[in-house]
Amino acid sequence: MKEDQGIVIGLIAGYYDVQTSTDIIRTRARGVFRKNNLKPVVGDHVKIQIDDQGTSYLVAVLPRKNLIGRPALANVTQILLVMSAVQPDFSLQLLDRFLTFFSWKGVPVSIFLSKTDLTNRLELTKIEETLQYYQEIGYKVYYSQKEVASNLPNDIGSEQIWTLAGQSGAGKSTLINSLKNGLNQETGVISNSLNRGKHTTRTVNLFHLGKGYLADTPGFSAIDLTPIKINELRNYFIEFKRASKYCKFRGCQHLNEPKCEVKALIKKGKISKSRYDNYLLLRKEIENGKLPEYLK
Image (cartoon, rainbow, N blue to C red):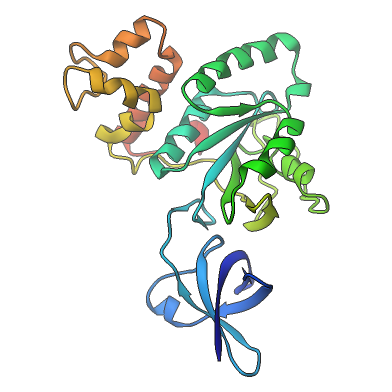
């Protein structure tokens, strides 16, 4: 009997593909996981045992850094958020929703604006001017597949796991195809009536890119923010959190409190009014405890 460690890079029909330092080993999980109500997922760092007959078993899951998505992905280092310029239309409300969710999960985000070749110059300029604000508050923004392809392999560090996320039909599978020759993920057709696409990726897999891994996942299209504590929501808008140290009250919610630095910066044009409006919308959503109709 020998033991090894690795990362779960794929899951299919109850089998786990584990990348060790030397090989990919297909294994099954011991029954103890079901007994303890713990299911190994893609991205998990695990221990496996291989018996004298060459049969392998997944026997332990090492502590996770995080767990996000449905289907789930563990130990995510960075999100590459794909937002389309058109088909479906660019949405600041959806962008802020994703950024809030991943800020809550403690995972950094980079933004890729897809389908820029399908929109006119005037509309694209408006979107680029809007995204300039997001760059100023700390988000890296890519505007072409070529730019992503030239940067991403250098950005992904040793054993890091990056994943694509974004609205349905935004072009995640198309981007993966451009990054990894031979994957040929099925690309989707947009439903014009709903202005959204259908997910064409149905499983989570990790692919080697740079010194680590890139994941493609069908999750993150209608993320639920209602579990966030309403008094903590302000902390997940990164520019609000920076400014709040100058508010008069430590627990300022940036609503009607006197001497609120966030509202002062909005008046000065230094914090985006649309970001604040979306913050108020998310507060209402959390108060109501349910997803808005457009995301159902």
